[in-house]
Image 1 (cartoon, rainbow, N blue to C red):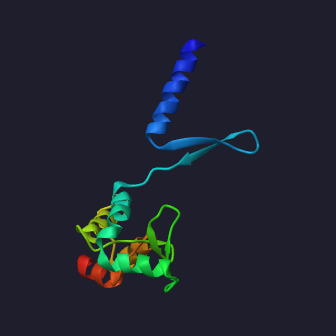
Image 2: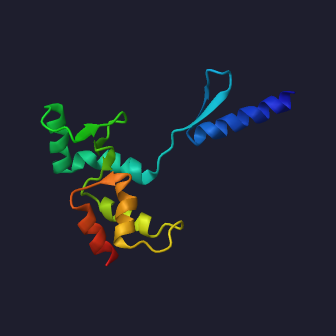
Length: 135
């Protein structure tokens, strides 16, 4: 019995290290909640304050001047729900490279790549920069 408890404790610690939480559900069961995010997403969120344009958007939200942008629950700036990518440290290029070289994709033309990127990210002139990247 004690060995089983130790094994369970070890497994719970492993889940916690992977940022996975087990939450009680209303029906007496357990719900698994994954709180992890890619290091690229974390970097985008952290560097939003380095881009002067995104800082201005953030200030405009606080002054109720614009409504298309919002500050999410995680504190990140978003445009219509998409994470705003700052124009710093080659982050936009990193995102395009990651999507383009994804092992889950075959060939991403600019239109397909644009649609994949815009599901999660936004930046000014995104379609043009993706077209230039793929060309």
